[in-house]
Length: 517
View 1 (spheres, rainbow, N blue to C red):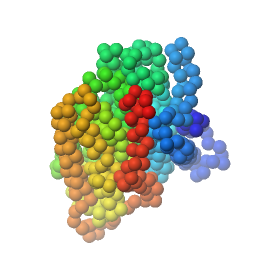
View 2: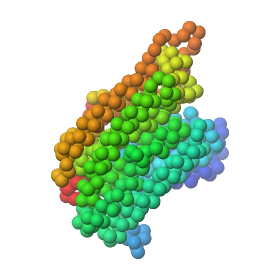
View 3: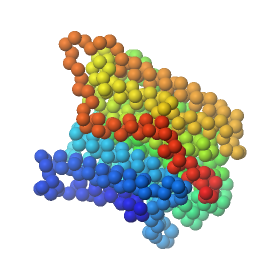
View 4: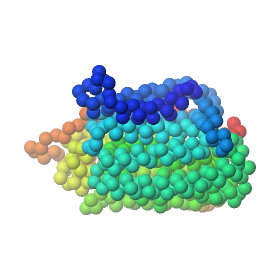
């Protein structure tokens, strides 16, 4: 298990280096481009298989215990260690990352985005996977920062070189926002490590802030929180996200929404909550307020984009919906209760599955119609995806109702638990304030349902297919292979939430109690 986790983290980096080498003659297939794309599918497939084996070998009777640990001294002068491990909080995120990256590699093998050589594309995809997996596996503050930053460069190039219209400004906006946030976050991490005398996240979590004064905790939470909030993204630090999603290639949007946004919320749970609880309590009401404003703002922005005549872009609408959905995650974290934090972690996974599927589907619609403009889709086509590509229309409707939180699907449980957590927040937090936040969040669920149903009505429904117009290409075999796991897991998590909650709850209880099981 120890070797397996290290392999999961390092394997994609080795695969990225190998992707840049010439393919052996016997493995080239029809062309070198096909060979390197096959290499990407193979490496990500092996990492996914290793992640599944890790999950199966995980001691599910002790999910609060850090397992598969590696602890090697790296920089003795600063007590920085190569410390890896996984528990019930990080394991689902590791598996989600491995799954989405594999599905993106598989999709790209058949539908490579337009741009430069596939060799660089595959290498960047694998480097992105390495950084993301490392973020969820490392247990040292400085290693966390390095892994957190590793993903920025590959995502920048994926947007700037393989994206659509406006890709360069969007890529610059993405890198500048996240880099500026990361600089502030680094100062907070250094403050914590130097004041506490260690960068080890387990030791700091066990100490539970007792070695840090209140003023140090407040400054640390503010600095670290800003960096994490940019990546989440929290309103009003979200403005880089719609442009990045709109311009990114399909697989870039899937990974950005499904995996990269989770790095910010994971940092709140893994670092801020256990290491600086008193500082977090000071800022929790403000975090909750920003969260519910984000829920309402994201929903209203989506309603405006979905309105006829607004020239709204389907990918841009899904991007704004992420601002709202991640607001529920932040609200759950801000409650500082097991119920709220479990809801946040569940909503993290549900958002990765559902929004990843939505971006896959939006990319497929754009490929078929040549545009993602909602007015064009609803007007020129008679708004009849059901009649022109019924399976594609059915999947888009399924993803939409899952995203709006229909009971029985994954999107329901996380948002419900986050609202329940706000109903009874942690001791020391203002219950009237959090009841207000809960009510505002509840209104956000209604607005979410409104805009998603408008999208389904405009894009999927409509009159019969005009005479003489051919059907669109419906779901292809490779699309079916890439999307089916997301559909199945969305249903599984919705019908059997204990699959995730059984892992996260004991770990969250231990985290919030200062390392006591």
